[in-house]
Image 1 (cartoon, rainbow, N blue to C red):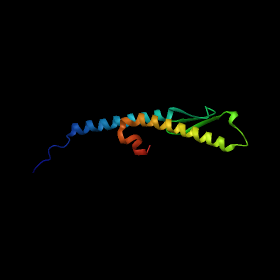
Image 2: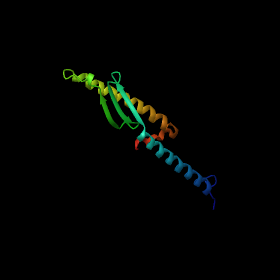
Image 3: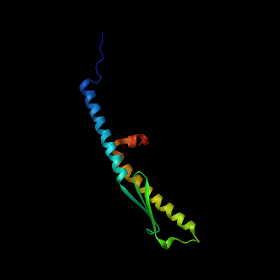
Image 4: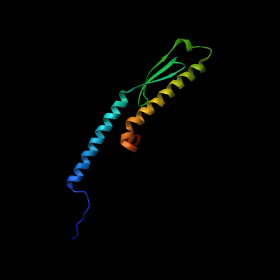
Length: 112
């Protein structure tokens, strides 16, 4: 009976599994880093400041009283949105940089 030659032997497969395990551990460590990374989005010369992590989870907003005008709530809404979008842009840049070493897998294809 003919045998298949050219496949991965036991040692090659073991090495591949170790590399995959190491890459998974590195990706998990990077994901944890993104959870802890503080991003600061600003608008209006820092009149509105939004704090988030590199995964875009907002955990705080500061608003300077000088931009709180009961007659112009639309301006304040625009400043808040601008600060959030600024934070998102910065968070995306950090995430792309940190996940680049994992190629197209960044966050398991968006699952993490």
